[in-house]
Image (cartoon, rainbow, N blue to C red; front, side, top):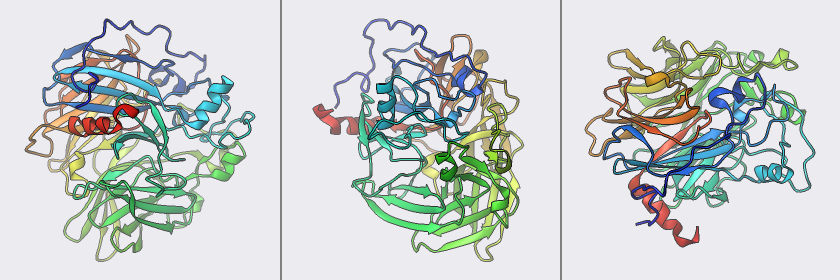
Length: 506
């Protein structure tokens, strides 16, 4: 059993002073540098956090999230994009109805170069920009380590689509270095991964230009036990995928990531409808035989994130969100899309593939605009009834999200709640099952919300089966967690084992 109280029973070490002047103000109208996106310049930790309501007694472990948080003023503030902020990991540790908190920068090699210089050196890769002079031996590209965080192989791994993950100590959040799955991954892997509910193995992929490489890492040894590469013809911005019992599922869309343009300091995230002769396609890779099949959907749009996929009655069913455009149109790269128009609203969709005929179809599931879809991860690859997401209905100029939603696929009903007392801009919800759960929705939804009045963040704990505006608990955090992307929950037994494995050598 680890001795540090932050993971056992959080306790106070005296009242923590409120941070002063920790929010950066770089005097720009760029949405992604203001409001809930604005950088937070300090690392923080605190014990015995203030709680309104009651943290459920069986909610024991840690919520890990990584924020997009530029450490230095971007070289081109007008072209800076949310995807380019440096990774800062947040850990909210819960035990016996009490809460503790810690944040740390992910100390990548590229961040160390900028810290040494005392300023931003790397240019943006989304909308382009001007790069500073790189010192000898510096990484040629920046690993911002800001997409996702989760425990694997007794490490807290922090992911970025454009490089290797970084391993952190799950208790201290100290950066230990890059992580390559014991030599199994050489260049990069996606920020999204799935856990096989039957084996516990990690399922993930890498996208380099038009080449997709599939991986399966053994949960016990963390070694790569299966991999397969195939070509999709175009350099699609391949951020997320889905898995069923049989298939790994990838969508080929007009959203592209163009390394050649990034090298020219031009916008690298490009919308190019002319690149797809037949419109959007679904690519299925048989996880067991590696056979590849293509299925035409048509049209020009992009998927953002998936809930899940499963096979039922000779049909593959895929649930996710669909957006009308993602990236700057290829014919206007000299004036890329601005921060206030970058993300058209996305909608929940269901795609079907008839496994006998190969025919693919789609249907809109809900008219509620939203993003960051999630399920109870124990149902990965299996039929699910419930999906959770944040809404993006009628946004203020400074926010990305404005509510929390639960969709019941059986009843075709969406429930939406807003934050209490004006809280807004909720993060992606994370589902945590109750102890001895007896149903798919028997658990809690954990999400971070922005308090405009204090400019700080709060962790809200909702009952996943009975979504109400007033949550079970509001945990007041001592800082603002800049609006980021993804995160995960680690149960106390998994967390304690990982911490014990680090021992005194941390």
